[in-house]
Image (cartoon, rainbow, N blue to C red; front, side, top):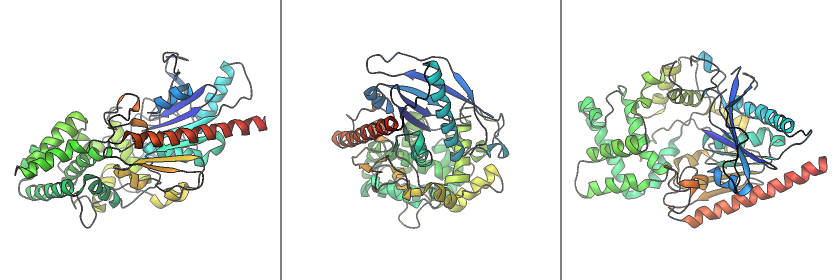
Length: 444
């Protein structure tokens, strides 16, 4: 999950990966100019003390001659505040804490920069970027700290916490199209039948015998399908499945082939990450900890429970609200519940009352249903429409996984659609940075 910030005169970009310790935050910084991409402020890992409880962008970096600074999101990286990720120790993991981390770091870095350059009372303009959850953080940072940033680009920003997120599956069906959708629904029906008669044999077919809870297994299969549309690879799924249907082949075996070769093989999904017993581990490796940490934020703050709609669903009806709530209780214990209403009350949800925020979404992306898709004053929203435009396609290009070099739009089914939105984005950034310069000049 990453957030990124830019500010000018050195134009700096800051990306939040994941982490922080009563807290220390790991920082990586480098100059990124169009003329020389190897200029570094330092190649060393740097740390600064952070308060524990305080309540492809690279294309744009080249255009603005920006320096890039990478900041870890608390808990997710080396700067985790605790060695053990017990539920009690996760109480400081939230988007609110992450935003205050960013505000504290922005002040620290500005002061450090001024000291390094032997200058005083200089405030560089900052601009915030992010994709996905980091896109939401980007928008929320501008909302809560408008005096610390000139604007925000919120790409595929999931700003609306959703408890019963049936729209996710509905968008998967819309993105798949009638023919592919019908085949995927048939696969689900066949899988449910086989699950009831011989679950072990079925799970062996998919290489997922470790998923003892049937809901975990069905969630794994559902996410394998949605990823194809989320990251701009619909043909990787729909072409082999519709061809298998026409040829009268075994659809379950055809889907298992897709899951093992593409979702697990090419994409790199790990079956074990869907295993609740694995999610319960409080001393995972840094790499393994990501799943437990994100599920904690899901279970305590934003939900995004990808529930099967009552009618015309692609995913299994086993993936209902009870499945998600049982997972949260099983993994984190009693008392962990997503305070969705409070989250949306604090940030505004789709009715976020910010300013100078650009929202962008790929039309095929199921997550766009949790984003702001309608423009409002000083907050334009763009939907990029193309066959393989998904999560963060404005910055990542097509497909979104694996991301092409420098976010190229050449492999998008409609490169012009992507470039048009990028042009609008850059115009907004130029305008808001210029306004920021005027304001700062008049106040100095």
